[in-house]
Image (cartoon, rainbow, N blue to C red; front, side):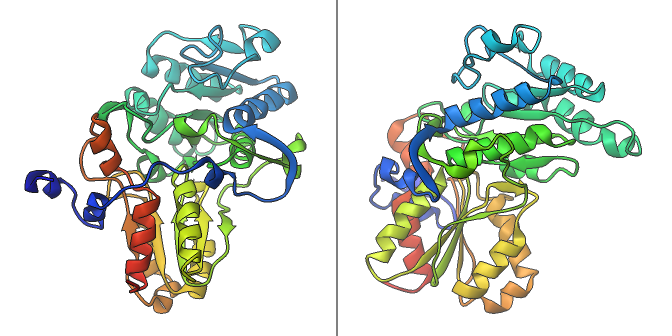
Length: 368
């Protein structure tokens, strides 16, 4: 690899992406879950169930976005909802994110509960003024008079072969904004529980999904069968308990972290994997508790290294009592500090995977 290309991959740890790579996480890795009742359900089906149940429960809930109705959604997440609830509650929009996001925010101010789908959160940049300056701030600026019960949802982060303008992770962008709640599901249980909680919440909620996870199947848990099942905001989930190092992540990289934890276990290293689920509010107590046990912390995200989720978690841990329990600096694993390449080989180098997490965990623990 040329020196010029190597220079694109900056610290923290990005040089590690130039090492030998493994393929994307195996299907078995994304099936690690608990409380299974035997059947499986895809993330897509879980999201669909959540919206269906909440639309049935509350007539003020409705959906709008590009192709959500007649086409059943770009990723078929809204499949069947037009037939069941009709065109007044499942509304196709023109290709104008600023326009239909503004309509949705205005409708929320008037007491309805819109679910505003963006075909990708990259396109939501066209609507960011409506989301932040209108949706997130008006409740505060009106002295609590104007409420905005709205859900903005859609795929976020890297997919496959969609290059720089369709691959960005917006967790840290929206996670900075007072007035927003931000969640990012990993598995089907997360998807259903967080979506139902988002729809019921009286505030604007950003639901950051992942395109490559829509078709992945997970065990259907007993909790999911209840129509009142919700996943509370601000509560992380321990996917795998461990004693040597904490790996905190969200969305699709949870699968890579679980795979890496399995590889580490074969060498006698016990990794605790935390699925953050909630970006804002962040479950800092869960992270502090884990760090006090393992004395090591690694964060994993697909976003850029500067001012990202790992940076925020590192700062909060440093400012908390957990800092005194660390035996090594916090390690941030991130995407490369470049716009996402289109070429498949460069795209693979630009994203963290199982191999990177595995190798960096051993480095943090000073194990060759």
